[in-house]
Image (tube, rainbow, N blue to C red; front, side, top):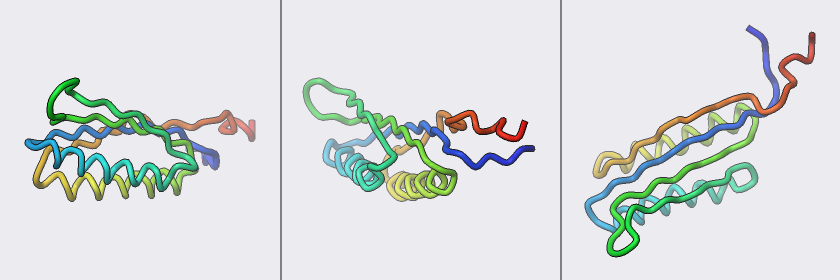
Length: 109
């Protein structure tokens, strides 16, 4: 196994399903606050389930480009938020991918 000391690209998805609109908005705002705090290396897109009426399902796609320590720290922070709110509603964290960003893997060859 080779050592890799470069940046990674991570893609995460959080799906929030709640019985009440206010609760769905509250949980989504906590996740978006975390993304805004990490705005130097995190980008996100948000999808809402309803065009009219209450939004009871939200999907947030999160894209991060950072070094391994930041990747792990952000993912664990997000996991803590999802676990905390997941007891009352359905909050699912899906890890889509984590891949090396650049080609410095083959630097020694």
